[in-house]
Image (cartoon, rainbow, N blue to C red; front, side, top):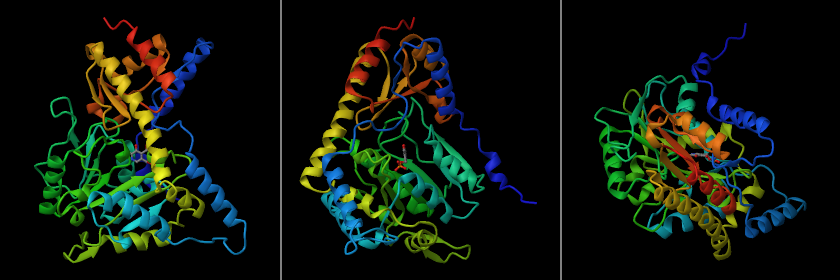
Length: 401
Ligand code: PLP
């Protein structure tokens, strides 16, 4: 008899996006002529930029010729990409990263779930509430039941407070999905200090880094002194360059970051991840890595940041117009996400129904990201400018009394 891995049975049904879809379809069946505008899903809508397309065409041509054809790639990624990552993402910010510390892969979702395998099953895991649900589900799948939630709310401005108890693995996401808030230098310094005192590891998810405005907010956790001893950084080309369908990401695991055996022997996590990737990951595609490399030119940078600017302008517009009519909004400045307090303490799903049924606008109920998300609502800036304006116009004209 094949027995099931019962850890999987402990997962809650992922009803959030399926319920949203069901409700949308039900609305459309009753109102077939209405155009539903989606500000719900965190997916990009602008196409790949010309530099990326050119690089993909060229790489495809290379794959078509015997002399330049590429077979299995290097587990850690091609040097041509890793060198650009170091130069453009780190050296520029005064952070020194060694080539051996960068691992290119096929999307942060896989990286974030894979890394959780490297820690012991009984690790205490700290997650924010509200949270990107994949962090939680990954740990449940691995059979972990020691998950602690650090509540974020209006009182702490949706910025997690340093825990009073010991945590082994801490997931930090900045700019945050879903709340759109960011951790500044002072807050990140406190987390690094906490992790150093507790021998904890910070899993720093900054896949929305490109949305950070200005230089006051750290773009990398390694801008904080000693962070390389305790933090792993996750970056993705998904939101940076519209690669949600192309799939490319990288992880930085510093050589000085250690985990411990039961007998308190140090183990270099970087080496463990290399070992894990060698067995479980077949390297990101050559064409994909060439595509990613193409953003690291003057032209490529200009093109991708034009797109980011487009989404940021959507976010700014939504925030500005909705604040004008009295909404309290977090995020939207360093992030494509706006985190709205629902008016009159409406429940997240009631607000969702009102927006869908009366304005044909789709968003994401905050409670879907955790109990602290109740009474909040997430809107994304990833739609077209026209649809964003139309959606805001429809919301502004609703009666919330
Ligand atoms: N981390 C966060 C916070 C996300 O919101 C997402 C995707 O939406 C990911 C990671 C995964 O990104 P990728 O497309 O690189 O798998």
